[in-house]
Image (cartoon, rainbow, N blue to C red; front, side, top):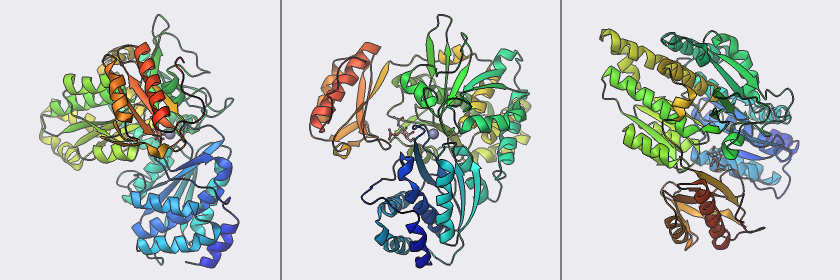
Length: 541
Ligand code: NG1
Ligand code: ZN
């Protein structure tokens, strides 16, 4: 390690003194102007991680659904997963080290992790469409090269595309080719093969309006469109030509405001979806004949997908297991429907896709989705084996096995992916001959409300039981229990956000009014018991 060079180049990416950032559920995220030093240092860290794992490591520059002025960075581990926990800690230490301590921290990490500094490093870099992203990704590359690492800059990519590239490169291209062309071809081929098996051909099933959040999803979907246009026509809105990234549009806006994005004309019963700013989340929605807006969130997406996969498993006659993984934010109706009607086991993990991903790996087929629309399905080698053996099976079973094979190819196994999920959903709807209303009618969401509370230090709240219960501050959980008892079909929990300096409050109940009241009362309890600052939460929205 040429420490002289590190110091020299680090000075060109100097850290504003006193600035402290935390590697959270989605890496580092803050105002773009505070991130140059973090990018350089994450380039250094990615090179070290690559040397240690003797694998390609990914670095993605994006702040997902955050406002355009923000930016962020996260590292992608060899199999496309989120960074290992001990390295998240190293990332935080390195990002927060003052200039003069940088060398020592780098050496510390190398020693603790037994990094062979002579080993080669290879890092791939991708970025979203934010104005700040290009320069920031250059700083990442500076960091990689100072440590003698090699790199490939993919330029503009969706976050899941970068995960895909990392996964391909570390599996000797068995999974796919590590190029955009490879990604487009793999997904489109699987989609077209699936669609071929659909009996209905009415074209109302085959067109979809897509709100691209004025982000990278628009560019990539446009590039990809002609590969699958025989099977699905997509009409893009908020494609970045006019509006601001994530402003009044995108999956996060639609989900949290429970209303359609601006800039999209919706006729009744038309199927529509929204991506977020880096295209790793997707939600669906439509207007009914009375003009009412209906949201189809990640929970209902997971339900559609897992029901279909379960049917295929039954068809093949195999005892392979399937499980659905959710977080505490999953609507209570979805959990009940999956467990009681679908008879699919459901598991709850902490918020953050790495927790869901990890749990989903325990099943032959693990479907995981956050309510906000981030998710995918994972398939074990046992499923692949079964498909290989299916040639000896009778015709009907062989067909189901073939479908399963295409579905596996269509899902991004490395990460939740709006484009891939969209194609899976469109294929399932076509194969089942389902309209968007029929899909929506699987179950009715319990009315719910999410609020944020400002507190002096959100770390005073600690939780257990997959974040569904507060352990500290004392008395908070008892208060929540008492409030919940006042309403029917009610549930509420609080947790410190991993991406914003707030405490999140979630409540659901039998009516919107009750859910709103409960959320408000719980917010007030947080404010009083967990050191609220600023204005007291007020009833009424
Ligand atoms: P936080 O800020 O920790 O709630 C949010 C989302 C997560 C996840 C991360 C990463 C909710 C309630 N939380 O985390 O699900 O997507 O951002 O982007 O949606
Ligand atoms: Zn995102």
